[in-house]
Image (cartoon, rainbow, N blue to C red; front, side):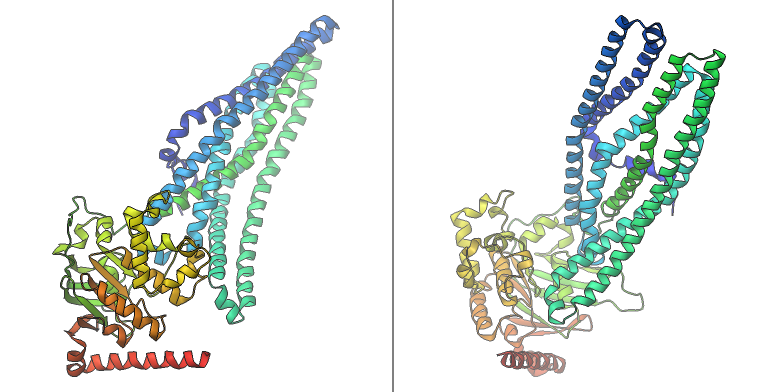
Length: 608
C-alpha cells in the first residue's frame, strides 16, 4: 500500500473540482472561524491588564470598562462562530449533491461488465455514507482543522511573547502529540478503509436478502441468511472497535499531554513570579491563553480521524470515477437519419474479459444478416451465447473482433444514445422500475419523457401506451388500483413473472425501434396468452427488423428465418421446416425445447 502520509493531501485535493464553486463561502467561513479564535485569544490579554491594574490597585471604577470589553469580545466570538456555521453548511450540501450526481452519471455511463463485477451494496455505500462523510468533513472538519492549527500557531507565539521559557515548555510537551499523530495516520487509515469496505459488503447482504426474501422464505433459509449477516456484522463491529481504540489512543495523548504541560508551566510560572520575572497578571493571562488553546489541541484527534475517514471515502469515490470505460462514444460519431433496420454480424468474435486464455471465444466468427423488416429467430443450446450475441447489438458489450453493423454502419461508429434510440430490447428477466405502469412502458420514448414527467400526459403518449399494451396483451393493467398510473413497486415484484414480461415487452414495442431484439421475452407466459401475444406481434413485426432468441418452438414460428448458433458460430440459416428436414443438430435443439415445454406444462398441471 502506498504511503498514506504522502497521499492524504493529494487525494483530498482531488475534491477541488467539486468544491470550487463553494470555495468563496468556505473561505468566508474559515475567516469567521479565525476571527473567533483571535478574539478568544484577545480576552486573556484584557484579563492580564485587569489583574495587574484595577484588581491590584482595587480601583473599582476601572474594573467595569474591562468587564464590558470582555463581554463585547465574548459576544463577538459567538457571532463569528454563528457566521462560520452559516457560511459553510449550505456549500457542503452543494458539494455532496454535485458528487452524488457525478457518481450516478458515471454509473450510468460505465459498461455492463463493470456492474457485473461490483456488488450493489458497495456502490450504494459510496453514494450515500461516503459522500455524507465527505460533506461533513468539508463543512466542519476541513475548516476547523485549518483554523485550529492557525489558532495554535498564533497562541504559541503569544505564549512566547509573554515568557519564552513557559512557551518553550508548552512546545516541548506537545512533541509527543505530533509523534503519535504521525503513527496514528498510518494505522487509522488502514482501519478506516477496511471499515468502509465492510459496511459496503453488509449493505450488499441486506439488499440481496430483501430482494431474495421470497426465495429465503420458500426454502426456510431465513436463519441461514441471518447467521451470515450476523457474521459480517460482527466483523464490522470488530473493525469499529479497533477504530475506537485507535481514536482512544490519540485522545489519551491529547488529554494527558496538555495536563502535564499545565502542571509543569504552573510550577515554573509560580517560581518566575516569585523571582519577579513574571507578573501575576501575565501568569493569569498565560494560563487563560493556554486554556483557550486547549480545545484546538484536543480537537486535533477527532479532526484527524475525520480527515482520514474523508480521505478513505474520497479514495472509494474515485475508485468508481477512475474506472476506465471501454465502451464510449466515438469522437466523430456517425448518424442515421432514417434507419432501414438492416442488421449484420460480420465475423463477430467475443470473449469476456475475465475468461481464461485456454477457453475458446464464446462467439467465434458469427456471420449473420437480417434484412429490413425481417424476423429472425436465434436458437441454440443453453450457454451457446445467444443472449450475448443480442447484447452486442446495443453495445452492452463490444465485440472482441469483427463488427456489428446497422444499415452498413458499425455500431461502434454511432453515439450510444443514438444507437439505442434505433434499437429496443426485451429481456427474459424483465426488470421494472419503482414507477407507474405508464412510466415503465414509455421509458424508451424520449419525446414522452422529461425530468418532470409532464411529457407523459399527451394524447400521443396515451395512444402509444394503449397500442403497446394491446400488442403485449397487458390489458390487466387497467384492473390495477390506479390503472396505468399504478406504481408497480420495487423491480415490479408486486406483479407476477408473466405480467412483468408483458409490460417489458410493451416497453420494447412502444419504443417503435428500427430493430427489435427479443431475448426470450415470453418464457413466463402461459400457452394461451403466448399465442395471443404472438398473433399481435406478427402485425408489428411486418415493418420492424426483429431478432428473437427462441426457447420455445412456438416462438420460432414467428420468424421468417431461423439461425442456428452452435459452437460459437452460425452453422445454419433457413426456414423452420427447411432446417428441421436438413440439420440434425437443429432437430435436436427443437426436440429439447419441446421437451422443456412439456415439462413446464406438467409442472403447471401439478400446481393446479
